[in-house]
Image (cartoon, rainbow, N blue to C red):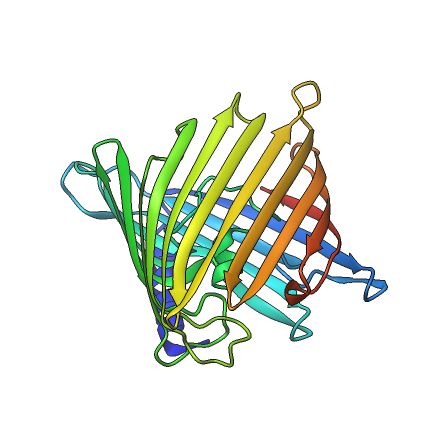
Length: 321
């Protein structure tokens, strides 16, 4: 682990050590995911997120402070011991691992740690173990990063900006890698959400030889929720450039929980991105959720050769106290 990341984790652990007298929760996680490719002719470990893993998430919330006073309000430590099939070894991964400071009078918030980038379709309400990946995951190779995040309100809108290290889940820092992201949009508790995002920097992307590429992005996204949690429609359109070369793509998705049998659900998604070459993915799946036990998920993924080809994805997932 790099010196910068070690320092960030140390700060978070110091916050955890002061949390004993306040509200805290501990959740456990187990994820078993496999991918069957007709080209490979066998079942193998899933080559992409969510990886097979064991993990835990520790949440701490501090008591409310007087308005106008900044204070450490929430600590989230979410760590996984995951099997990485690309490196054929076990790795320790940080997911949401951050400490947040609040000022209740204005609603301003500052986070330090590892978090979802404020760009495009992201949501703090995203369920753990989610198998449908974002457009950022396809475009950048990651959707979370280490850094500092600032959030505030502007009328009905939520404003968020982040300065991050541009390395995502890479095991070490890359010289010259930086990333700046920001989003202006409606809060996620609304039934109709939309926003506009900006991204600029030189992030490290998997498979590019360790050389950061100067990139910029503009994205517009939207979510429509009907009779929550029964139907959710989402979409995102992005345009930008990598090292001066035009890039762009889109995402369309649908999740349908069956009203007559809410333990069953259907999900589908299309992702397309072009930067030099084209990459695309079509996903259709079925899920079955057993409350406080497991979620079973089966998906057919029709993917371009650049993403490793098509196949069947299966997942058995548990997350609970």
